[in-house]
Image (cartoon, rainbow, N blue to C red):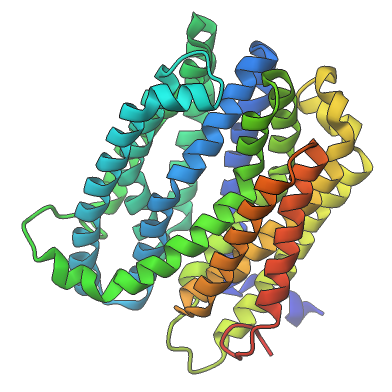
Length: 415
């Protein structure tokens, strides 16, 4: 028994999970305080706008997520000098691409305002700035993650989450409404960038000298497509329901649903650190079968952590909603258990997809594209009630998990 406990404490994978999990819990607490505190400060309609903006940020932020996974993969499987050159090239591409997307969002802000029933177009302009300022953070944290610097990542994310809450409360109390709620994110990101600059200087520099970008990026274009398709599907499963509700239902219903939905996301976020540790631990060329062992451990951890939160939410939904958002959100208390179960499935999907990305298994692209098509199709034909919207995500999640677990390759699943 003693030897068993000793082997667990000396397991680097579990130790890294513990470090990042502790950091993630601090981040999660402040990230989720952001929602109930603002939910009590703002009207239901204004809070619904904030939830829609957060969901849009996740959708547009998919591009940044693609670069994050690529940088982690390169850092974990390359020498420092080789990784530095590739990451410098990717950094230039990312800045140019996100700048273009940000300009498009600003230009389309009046149309977005009308489509999502917002009171003003200014929140979309601020959203564009958040995307652009997030690129240095994405690259710096990805470099640290690839080098297993999980303590530094935890500190950076804590600065961002604590700052986001404090500055959002300040700007909302100042009268900036939903625009102020997300402007606080920009200010918090600025302080996170300052911290990260001190931690990435001695590790890997994001050089901006002129280099042949095409030569560095060409071999990774196919992999970028794989990451993009998988990230798109995962992001849609995670947050697309809020956008669907915001478009098809009234502002009041969207606000109430958004509050319950954001609570269910806790099931997903508490498992995020597990995926974060697994990604840099998986090697493309695995000679000893360590990848399968790491995947098994990760699945067990997700079942314990995510499953535990799911069970608590299913047994005490009224208590959870009242504690986090207040009694006015109890109108949709019956949706929390099903939403939480759906997010637990999305957590499993995220882990399995991330494993396939780490080993560059391109079967993930086909599965994710099919899953993306399913949820879009279902959302177009089946959105009459809030329950129908949730069912669309649930059906898609079950279909994707079935495809992942029936994939006929030993490299994908532990056997």
